[in-house]
Image: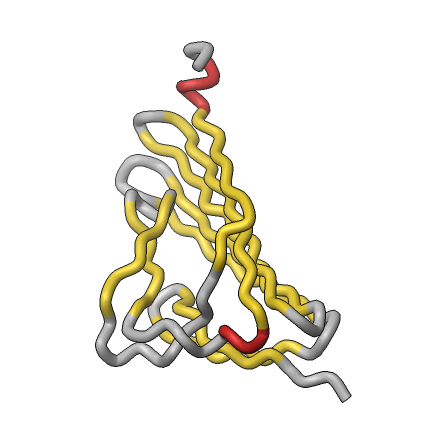
Length: 128
């Protein structure tokens, strides 16, 4: 019998405990307007029986144009409750994120970066 993956994530404004069965995925997203445009955040968590994969996308547009960031992380099932006192919070109007201390945080996954990329509308238009 395969075991389920149980882990905590900081989502939108609070801690959420996710439970995934092998070969199960769940996706969540939110967005809002800002004083200069809009921003959105989407994450998808998938469990293959050995590791959880997190695919995240932050997107937004303001006076500097559109900026979209992508990243994929993985965490082995035995490392899902090892990182203390951190939560992931959006910054720059939701177009990025950072980890900050949170003494009330549960133990969270030890995410290992697999890949990361971004698209910057004005940098592309300028030929960068």
